[in-house]
Length: 346
Image (cartoon, rainbow, N blue to C red; front, side, top):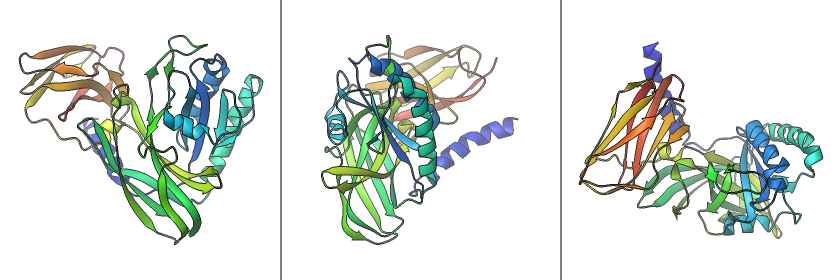
C-alpha cells in the first residue's frame, strides 16, 4: 500500500506538466446574474447554481456575475452589458438567456446539463490555456497559449478572468452565505479583453500572450481560479467561443522556495491535532493551507499573518475532520513558499 501512496503525488505533478498544451476540447460558459441584495438569488437561484456547479464542473466554466451589490466589479458590469434582461437571478448558457423561474428550476438544471454535454462533443474552433503562472510581489503573471484548430474568419478576443470560491459575504435570503464562482475581475482591464486575431486565420495558428494583474487585498489567493476565454465579436455583442480553467493556483505557481525559513510539523502521522512551527530570518506575510493529493484546498488557517524573525511562530492545526490519507501543508508568503507532506491516520 505504501508504494502506491508515494506515487500519487508524482501523478498529480505530472498532470500539471501535461496541462501546458492547448487542449482540443470544447467547454461551455454558464453565468448566473446575481446581486447580494436579491432574496431569490439566495433562494431558488442559489440552489440552482449549486446544482449547475455540481453537474457541469468538468465541461463548463461557471461564473456568479454580481452586476450589483457588495460583490460588484467593473468586469461583471462589462459582461452584464451584453446580456439580455434586467432582473435577477438570470441564467445564461454561452451568454444566451435560459428562460426560467423558481417553478422551473429542476427542468432548467436538466436542460443545462444536456446542452453542456452535447456541446462538449463538438470539435472546437479554437482554445487557450494559461501557462507559466507566477505569483510574486503581490502580482499574478502568466502566459496564455492560444491555438486555432480550424480555419476561421472574424475578430477574436482573449481575456483571463479571476474567479474566487469560498467568498464569505452577506446574501439576502441566505444567512452566513459562502459564495462560489464569484467573478472578481479580469487581467486585461476590459471585460472582453484584447484582440487576439482579426480577419482570416489559418488552421493550427498559435498565439502567445503575456498578462499580469495585481492581487486585490480582498481576494484569498488560495481560493482563486482562472477562466481563460476566447470571444468572437458579433456587432456590438461578443459570442463565447471556448475556454479553459486553471484551479489550485498556489500549487500551479512557480513561486520560489523559501531558503531562510524552516517549517516543521509534529507529529507527522496525525490523528487529530498537530503543531506547526515556523522560524524565519525575514519578515513574511503568510498564509497556511492544507491540500489533498488532488490539489484541492481542504482547510485554511492563516491569511496575511505577519511572521517575523524576532520569535518562533507556532500554530495548532485542528485536522480532526480530515479522512485518512496523504495531505500537503503549504506555507505561502510574499517571499516564496514551503510545503510538507503529512499523513492522517487514526
